[in-house]
Structures are given as structure tokens and as C-alpha cells.
Image (cartoon, rainbow, N blue to C red; front, side, top):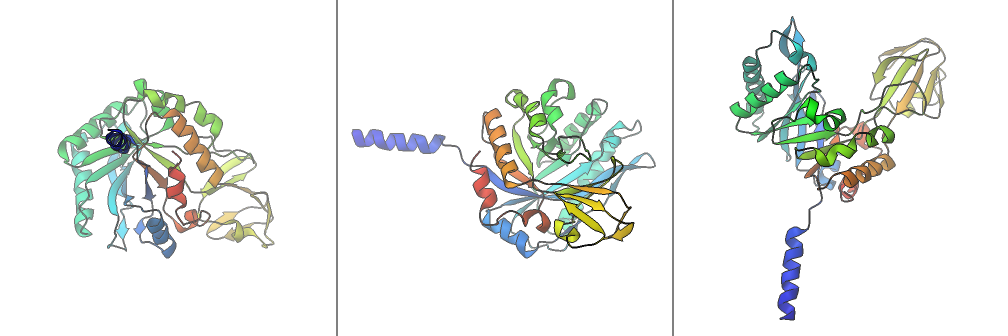
Length: 331
């Protein structure tokens, strides 16, 4: 009898124990190819899905138009490819938009890219930072996509759309992806970080338990330089490293801030004397803190944590050996 109870307790525990979130990545490059370091990160963290930006949709001549379609250099991929389409909010603000036509064209282009690369995607994700003014058309668009496409449908969700979901509406999709980054205001101030700000995050995530749509989580692993002149933001620059500025007489580097000493064209960017470049980045401690905050406010373990984005420059500062897999295990 005691043995039977033990077996039953083991069976019950194994059935109710929640699995750790799976590790996935976004790929936001216009050319899909995987470096040695990127492949190592995928393998060592047991990644089964890559969310690939297929194309953007913007307004041209007041009509929706696809731009920057993906080009697959590497076509033999062991991971499942999930198409992502980024649609600018301006598209749904247009008074001339034909939602049925937009739906048909978006699905057609996704299918054409899939077919050209011999992919058989089972899911589509739409990325759009919709507003109160565009919400009705965006929700209608998602409903049309859901009706016309037999694939699973997801969409990205921003923090303000979580907190004010009764006003912004809940998308009619299978699940949402909470983009837990780009939450602060861009500033030239040295200590500010617009990618992640704990104080700002705490103002929004208390609403997570009330949000009626199941969520996956997207976390940042990218960095950028905030280029400013006289405290005015001029540009955001990616793919420049601290090492690019070290031992260069045209720049002065101090505590992740670069001071431009003379007018110069450098790495394809023009800098004027007196300009400043402030590095905003995400480090291990930041990611661990994000996991702690989210696990405290969500009453379930998300199925996936998707890291933005898969890029050699982004992953080089994180140890490849199971780093992301071990990180999400703390959720």
C-alpha cells in the first residue's frame, strides 16, 4: 500500500510539474544566414524555433506597401521558422485602407516566401504597436487573418497595451508576445537606459495577472549607441562596439560614453566635434532581474522566452554554453 501511494505521488507530481520555458530567438536581419557563433547558441540552448521578420508594411502613396523582404542565404535550417510581419501603425490610421485586400496580400507574400525556400510554416506573427486611433482596424485585420489562414496566429503586445487593455483591446489571436523592452524614454543622460528601466516596468506589470490573453515573453539582448548633439537625440546606432572607439584619437571614451573630438566620417556615420554617443546595453544582471519581476507577476510559466535578437554582436557578451537555457529555468 505504501509503495502504491509513493507511485501515485510520483505520477501526480510528474503530471503537474510545469516545464521550463523554451528558448527561442527573433531574427531581424534582411538576410538570413547563421554565423558559427549563432549556430552554437542555437544548439547549446536547444532552440527549436526562430521568429524571422519576413517583411515590413508601410504606407507609400497612402497605400500599404511591403518593404525589405527577407532573403534566405541559409535555406537548410533545423529550427522551425515562424514568419513575422512588422506593420507600421500608420497603415491602420489610413482612411483609404482596404483591410481585406491587405490581409490577402500579406498572406500571399508570406506563402510566396515560404514556397520559394521550401518552408512549411505553421504559425504567423504580426508585429504592430497599434494605438487607440488604429485599434478597431487592427483588430479587424487580425480577425480577417485568423479567418483566412489556417495557421496559428500571434501578435506582439507592448506594456501600455497590458496596463490599459480595456481601452486598447485584446487582440483576437491565439496568444500574445509581451515585448519587455524599449520601455523608457530616449535620453542623452548618462544613467538612463531606454531599453530597460525597472521603475517603469513596475508601473505596468502589476496588470499581467488580469490580462486575459495567454502570453509568451520577449526579452532584449541587443545594445545601441544614442547619438546626441547639445542634448538633442540625432540617431540610434547599432553594430558598433566599444573596441571601435578605443585607442582612436578622434574619440574619448569614458564610462560607456564616447565624446567626439573632431568632425569625422566613421564606420559610415558622420559625427561632429562635441557630439556624444551613450551606450545602452543589456547585461546578465538585467536579464535575471527581468525574469524575477515577470515570474512574480505572472501566475503561470510562459511556454517560451524569445530573445531579441539573434545576432553575433548581441550574443558575444553572453556565454554560449546553456546561458539562455539556464536563465529561463529561473522563471
